[in-house]
Image (cartoon, rainbow, N blue to C red):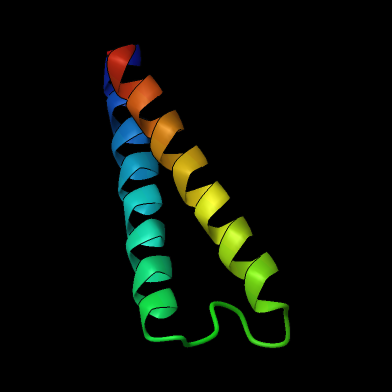
Amino acid sequence: MESVTAGFAGTAFALFGAALLLWTGARTIRRAPVALGVSPVASTTLATLFGVLFLAVGVWCLTRV
């Protein structure tokens, strides 16, 4: 039963992390702001950092299944 929960959590984290990285990359290529009202460098850096973090947690969860 715990493997189902870990699989679901891993999939959710990995999908969110990948989508965040994809969205951040698309916004950066178009030179559009990642977050309004925030420094472009800070918002891009934090979005990339959290995207990689969520993707890593998702992969970690999936290896525990």
